[in-house]
Image (tube, rainbow, N blue to C red; front, side):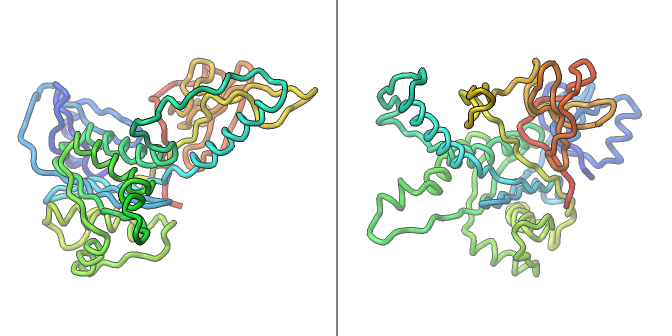
Length: 337
């Protein structure tokens, strides 16, 4: 990162500083360097507070990829491209099928109970997971940057003629978006812009967006998040920082009763959970052989370690004593492919 977030000794968020200035503060013993799941930041030793400038976060939502840009009038501090959560709907469908199948055979199961959420405002699991992932990223950024405004590209669901109730209340996209805005405003103010406004601003700056939506290029998604942030802060006619931090959400198998198919002798072994021999799954760890990786499942008295770049399992026989925990996390970071 060219600019590092700065925290006061009392935990207040200050203006980010250049990497050269950060090295100077570290040499002089005026700051401590820390990390948090992809972001390196400074914690000042003696300074308690300071003046801050307006900082905006541009958000470009998407179905497969989405982008975030943290920017002030003078600098672009951070660009993020994140994969979206896409597996919850199919997982819930499988869970429902397995639960109904258990009730048709001689298997202990809980009795059906009344709908506990009847009459309550409740998001469907897939919608909650998608928009909750966006909210977690925004909360993470707000922890280290003095954000004043979120600029969000306001996406709209396809409407159905003559069905006002569907258009306003039933569409998963509209329901999720409404919930997201209500939670996001608790952090900072919100400004929304329709998609055609984003394109108009981008064209005025002479910037182009690639049609390859799954690309890791800046022009795929971050160009729109940067345009939105720059619309609020102004100050630039072209991006001054095109470096990107790539985030990939981790999938956890929670509270699954057993494996879907029986194994040897018709037994169905237990499956799922979020703990591996005392380690929280997804935790970033350091291993003397495999370096930086994250914790997966467990086999006997050993844990699995997975590669940060691809998510592939590197070993399933790592001893807990050889693993040094850095932090807990629900995502991994990678470099451009």
